[in-house]
Length: 184
Image 1 (cartoon, rainbow, N blue to C red):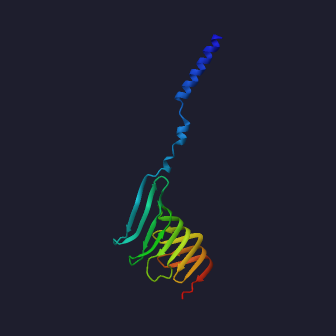
Image 2: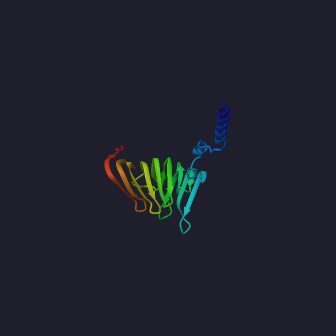
Image 3: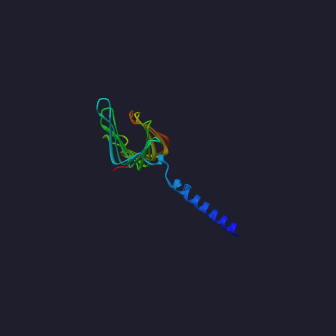
């Protein structure tokens, strides 16, 4: 009986020592992976990009920016991106709820994307879609989502769009309807 008691106490001491000194796996699992933590965060951000002659080429405003160096992208909340034409005038403004900027100067905008023409007397006033891909510095746009193009006295619905803002060219991949408004 005495040997059994010594053996039982020894096992309890060993078990207690193991549990005391063993690494706690729960704490390791709860710590987030380093790459999912932003390297820096900025709020109420304004970014201006200038060309070689010193003229403003692009202008970006966002409510919040989170940069992830290891993942290779920058995430925006409520971005508003202004593109300038060859005459250095603000030509187009693109806004959305969320955006991601990749290092290859590719911007993906999602949720309530609105492309507004800032120049007077334009044939197209605005373009609405759910998501949009913007390639810089080419200033080309692409989406496979439903699109609504609105101009003075008409609107056009389609699915998918390719656009070259420098050449002032927009092409619907699939045209669904065009409605002309009767203005009396």
